[in-house]
Amino acid sequence: MRRGTRTTLLRFAAPFAVAVVVIAAWQFLVSVNRVPPYIIPSPLLVAQTLYADRVLLLNSLGVTLGIALAALAFATLLGVATALIFVQSRWLEMSLFPYAILLQVTPIVSIAPLIIIWVRDTRTALVLCAVVVAIFPIISNTTLGLRSVDRGLLDLFRLSRASRWQTLWRLRVPSALPYFFGGLRIASGLALIGAVVAEFVAGTGGQGAGLAYQILLAGIQLNIPRLFAALVLIALAGIALFAATVGLSRIALSRWHESALDAES
Amino acid sequence: MSPTGEGDAIVTLSDVAKTYDNGTQALERIDLAIRDGEFVTLVGPSGCGKSTLLHLVAGLSRPSSGRIEWWGGPFDETGGPGRRIGLVFQSPTLMPWASVAANVRLPLDLAHVARPDANAAAAQALARVGLAAASARLPRQLSGGMRMRASIARALVTNPDLLLMDEPFGALDEFTRQRLESELLELWSAQRVTVVFVTHSIQEAVFLSTRVVVMGAHPGRILDAMSVDEPYPRSDPFRLSPTFAALAQQVSACVAKASADALPDSAPARADVTRRKR
Image (cartoon, rainbow over all chains, first blue to last red; front, side, top):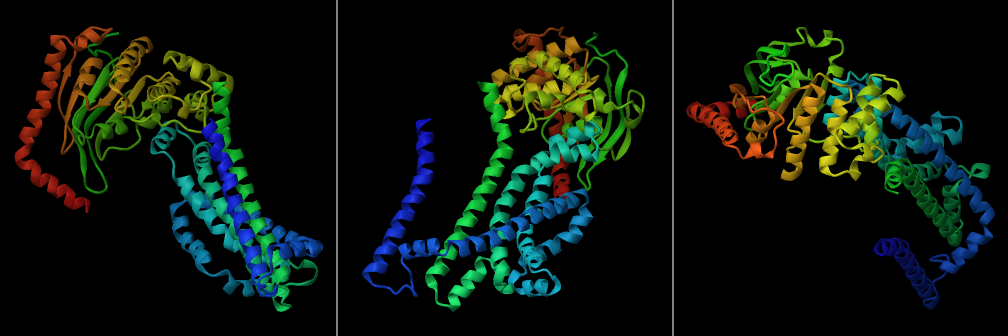
């Protein structure tokens, strides 16, 4: 038990220590060598900029995060629906799966301009781009999970004359959950990347300016501290998204663990 | 109950053969009748098609030729044989996300039995295998033997007339295995269920059965059948008796003779099979 607590402590303390060391070294090197802030700003300056420009940056963060979350939601919905269709019919899967792969291997930078031209509403276009990037791991993982069913249980369901719906709902869906959450975890990062890349391509400013636009603008204006501040926010947003999906998967799958605890106490 | 197997035929296989799509002939000319109240064991080396035979009897696959009748009719017309046949696999195959009770209740849930009735039946089945206290637990919290008990409870929950078991105790340690064998015999005589039991252990076959069906491989076929006339309840001293040794010897000799007979022409036959597989 003590060993377990220590491991948990280590899991948070060790990366934190690495961060402290790296940031301290960065601050030290920048100050000692007098590196100008338009090349590499010191961490302190980045933090100051983050605070000074907080309204602008947090607004942009909200825009980007909104796009990423909407994309993740659509990718999940569409991806799961696609996987459910795939698993119902082999020939549907065989005829459509290559196109899902096509979607995955085509760089989003190269199709984003087209999507932005075709879709009138910019925000919708950005969400669509991020969906294209994020959907594949959900489709492929969920399909794999829906098919990774214990052969014996499948035989038992057949022997019990289970309907297609019963087999899907009582056997395939629960079996697929761990796979689905693995896909969701990957998709959460991809949705954010997709949102940022699409913003870069679209270059939307003004009211709907996301973090990518702030980075673009800061780069042109040589406002490197703000560029770094925006980068920090993107990274933090990515970590938060990832942590949220991990938490979600814990909640969904720990019912197996929790009921375990109940039985033993 | 008549241990000699004089009851009505529950399942009749006439001239049944099974060839897989890849050309492997798994079973050849099988004639077998399972009678009411029997405990029939199919014993033989691996590759003799005993599991394939069990799948055919469960209606999970169809014979390539020949006829199988369940209660004198085809599989689909016997009034839902899914509920009259219980199946136990080599591994417990429980759903890891569901409690033991929910796992045992599954066949009833699939048949849309009302929840209170299903719960009562599941509790009863769990009590029969001595797992009443574990019903709220998850499969991963049980030992191997307890999981197998849960699996047996699930097969019994519909009160089946025929219980099919595919090497159910193969993965268990010797002590657990012998205990479960004795418990199975108690269940069998208390429930008046007919059992078809697949195993590769000659000792297990002789200890459990009213009738031992010896199978040979390449292709899978029935070599011999012998009845075990030892009265029930059988207990551990039976395992040490001369009768037991003589019967085990007889089964073993039967398998050995079949492999010796098959030896001269078995090598090319096997090569043939591998070629077709590729």
